[in-house]
Length: 153
Image (cartoon, rainbow, N blue to C red; front, side, top):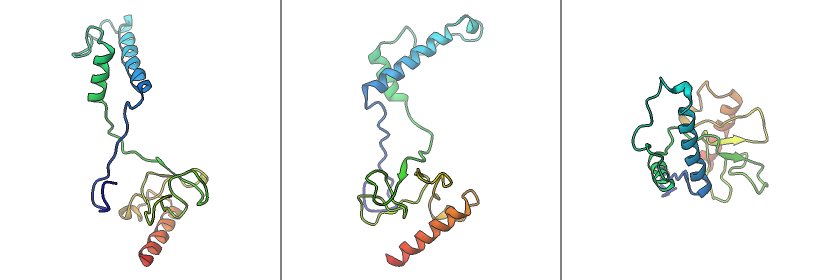
């Protein structure tokens, strides 16, 4: 969070390539793709790599290239584990309150429940509480928690 204003966009840092191993794996993936494309089966199908990836680029060049082009079009979901309230692990408790924070309730698709196989995700915001995409039990639980939170705030 960059502020206490709930309408401000969150600060999201996916931490791409913060580990040298990540870059090494990505570089090798590009080089493996080149080896794959060099197979005789592709001779009449592929012309060759496009710039700037011609002439066996150096590690330094590939690192810069990867840092410049890597991104995600996926909306991260299932990244915050729900755990028992007294557990030392997990992000939220069963009441969807964020651990080690005061009064912050998370109700979106980032929540996943690791100790109840039936429940896969929690509703994404108030607008989806009535969505038929979520099981009735999930919708009822989220509505109950939201009503309780509104009464106490």
